[in-house]
Length: 355
Image (cartoon, rainbow, N blue to C red; front, side, top):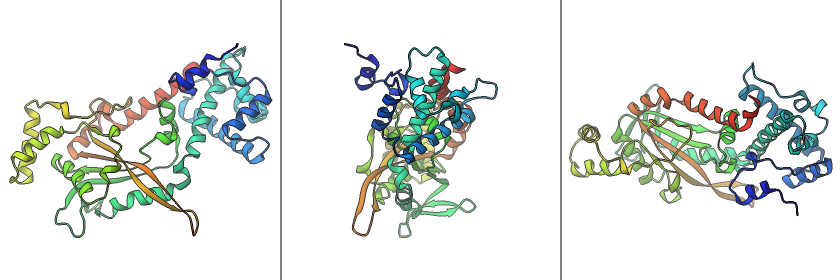
């Protein structure tokens, strides 16, 4: 019997289908059946148009985002629809292990990988209900934020006595972009539905103590539901919980500025960092410090007058103090360096053969 080992590597071996050579298509009929199983029926002109649009977007993405001007370009036989002829041919070139032009095979695989990511991004739950998801997740935060960039921001409620002054408050409104494509290409373990930070908020507090006050406030005022957290996604490299609690419990009557001073003094004595929680990221600098957790919100979408669709959707909360934020902007922790590392990984995974 003739088995394709790569099928088993993908199904039960832990390998992403994007990282192995699958020979599933030998002729147009097999290509047609493969695409139908994938979700697109080429007897439907609308489906064929969609696939050609994905092809054009994939070629544009590779040319404009992954390739430098002096690097080898995509062969015209694959990039130009007139020369490619039918979308079937892209699959045939990518599946043919006997392809005499290995460069052609590899480029066909690269285009298909990008098309695959684009398809999943466009057909994710978020793509269908992005407006409702963002509005319902972000509104509770915005309702408790007062001020603006000029006057400064404050976290608090109209009734609460406690107010927390912030250096910055920003929301993340997700839009599909080249960066989201790169994120999925650079992370073999990620799919569109496993990207948990499409929506989020970031607090930059005036000091360390206030970072912990923000977390406490969000839970106590039901802005986030602590039972909707995804525990294995939490990250804390800002300050150990155990050390923080030791300081505040021992000094309950001290004013905030004195507690802040003690927190930093305790850091300077070489405290045990066992209570720090690191969610490893391949692309973040090792000295990037922040608090992050992923929560979920029960979203309600009205389908029609009599039917409502409800589902949980994740969002990210990031918190850091201002001094930490400034340090994070430079060196290996900077956002620009993060993006470069991510882009290089995507290039290695998709275009390593062509460079």
